[in-house]
Amino acid sequence: MLKRKKYVFDTANLQFLQHRRNLTQKLVRFSLFFGASVVLALFYGFIFQRLVGSPKQELLEQRVDEMKLKYALLEKKIDYSTAAVADLRSADNSSYRAILDLPLIPEDISEGGAGGTFKFGDLSGYLNTDLMMSVRSKFEDLKTQTNIQYNSLNELKEKAAEWKEMWAHLPYIRPVNVTMKLGDGMKFRDIHPVWGSPKWHFGQDFRCPIGTEVHATGAGTVYFAGNENDGFGNKVVIDHGYGYRTIYGHLSKCNVKRGDKITRGDFIGLSGNTGTSTGPHLHYQIDLFGEHVNPLWYFEDSLTEEEYFQMLDYLTKP
Image (cartoon, rainbow, N blue to C red; front, side, top):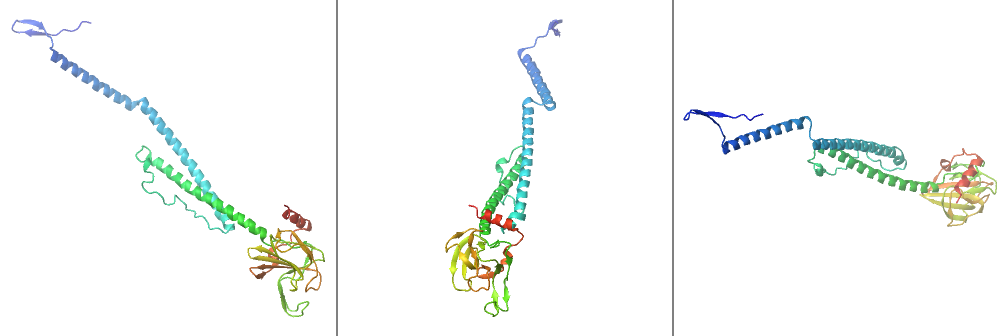
């Protein structure tokens, strides 16, 4: 296609002459054309970016969405763990801490009051600052609650070990075979069978023939073994700790000596009829911090003879 030429009428020569632009006119025209092209390109680029978006921006938005999803999943895991820790705390309070006589853990444990407005200042200024701060706050709360629960577990373990040791020492079984019938218990006697005068009886008698095996009712240390001429005849006294002492009186033979370490169920002597006694029997007495307590409060007779000796065999195994 031929380039269109432009002509102008020259009035001086009365003829048409071809019009030619000078350099300035050409530069001005080129500048206008180039400027219009740039503006048009920017306009179309803006419209395209608004409607379609750039690949880089699309990738960034995709990564932001992925991070949001990860934070949402992390928040759910934290919520689940927090609920699990709360269940453990509730179980501790309702069962273990109550049984072991420990103070309860408050139900409204939070982050402990630390921090403030700028506690998570390192997370400010980001596109999803509120989301990140929320998850971080929940995580800090969970960490505090977990530490408290961990300390509670250690406290429970220590207390349980103390209680296990204490229960091993307390006088909690029958001293003789369950087939041995009960005699006089802890009561005030209007007439003592030997002295004939009113007198308290501070223990529990068991009607057992001479030579019946007598067993320690709790772990401890032999405080005395022998005869003190105090009416008990041959006797064994065991110090169980925790304020408890047990006395086994009228024995025909002591099988232990002072200072021996005793385990519940150990064979400590044979019943007899020594001391102030009107017939073969065992006098069994429990003192708590020097005060006499009823031995019947510390054992029950629901075991069979076989079960009783199975229990003794289990207790005395090394």
